[in-house]
Image (cartoon, rainbow, N blue to C red; front, side):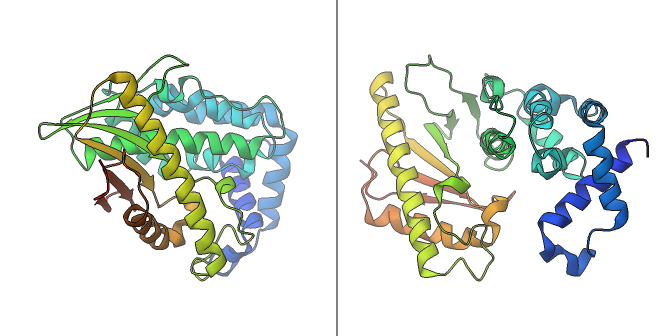
Length: 294
């Protein structure tokens, strides 16, 4: 079996089915063809890397902003288990390219991923995917501000390594904003039921874990914004923290995450945060004003 793009797609599909038996009801169990494709990829990793590179060449903006991370992910363990590589060979690749293309004009936007690299340890494939998700959440937020909120101006803030910074500076309706992005990562949760199904989200022990993770994120972002304002010696009309609730790891829990975030803003003082921007999917969002902000 000579490895080609179609076999790679079959291998990615088979790997997804093997990891998620819950999909078998609608898609069937992994077939002999899936298993043969996976075997072919594992036996021809150099050719697999070239096929990934060829696919990446079809999406020049994705290649410019994320290409080095995608290629680095190929060289880490279990590349067929990577949602990063899976996305490249799916219909979502066009959406990703369009989103990134819409924000190419944003000053300094390339710095979001410029210094991001996979760990050198071969066994850190999962961690590499987490790094890509971190980077993608910033790019997604920039696109959301440009395409959905339609801000008048946005730039990625760049400061020296030892200087405090926030993600974005925005001008909108005569106001100046600073924007920090808070991505909830799997390691932020201690619940043994992760990833949760919709029935697990409301378990008391999981709600406690959600609250803990959100408190830590809001505390950290409040402190980061305060440091940045003190350094800049300039205040801003809106000091926004973005939480993208629609991440695939806890898609079914987004309503509870949003509800708990709003509750925490009302009960605890985060004086530097004037607003939460909760992004629920590609278009649905809500601004939550912090009435306790200074």
